[in-house]
Length: 140
Image (cartoon, rainbow, N blue to C red; front, side, top):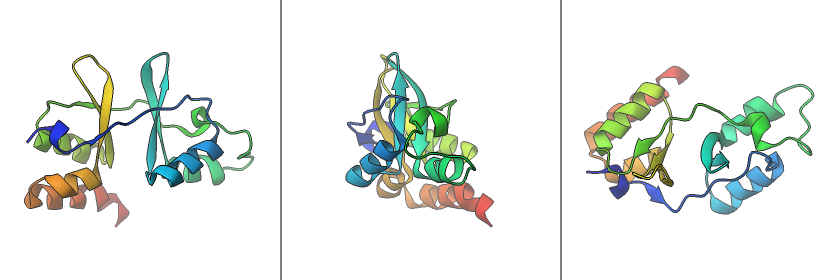
């Protein structure tokens, strides 16, 4: 099975100047836990709901009225290709201990996101079990 058969399609990114409040509202409206951040036609980061809390709200002096995606985003984003084998992409996510992986096409354009939910719906049960145990291991 290929990544494109399991991923969530139709994902857009927002500017790094998008306010944290706007990000939170978008997450609520779309029922999502992360938003890709793009600038100059490139994916430069990702903001998760956890980033908003841990890198934002939990920090002294954080001003939610003026904070932007750039203030809380995670940089150094890893991606996979839509034609990659799903099991390989899952192993990549497992190694990185991440729950979401942007998906790009041959033209280096983001075409979707592979999430733990997508994996749970599409991948063989044995792979899903191994992945979830590994990604969640640091919480014990």
